[in-house]
Length: 152
Image 1 (cartoon, rainbow, N blue to C red):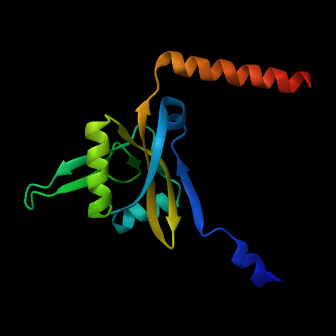
Image 2: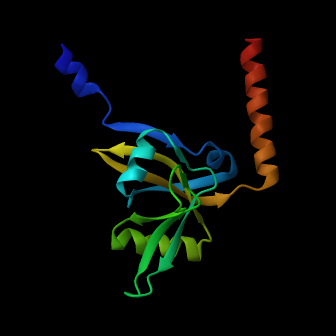
């Protein structure tokens, strides 16, 4: 009986979410990338000391190899002086990201972080920032829906 429960347990342990990203951005796609951390940073993340609020993905050109790389900028891990980390994606995924962010003027925003098979993964949302009137309309629709549910 215990073995069956262990098999149905989720493999992805949820760690941290960026709640403001869902309110401020309209996402069209999501990309999951690995992240390069040292031992102390991994311990801090496992202890829940990761803050993704205000963090985003950025494609930068490496000075030595002249190849593009994906970086996570603005995330905060306690006990770390660094605020940008290299993200691990395939070359094909990176080329698609470059095309989407340049041509369609979309943004990469860190949405959530989780452990998968012992490795920390960052889910990046690809989308555009919502306009102020879109956010207001969404809030108005939610409040109307709540009132309708209360009356029933």
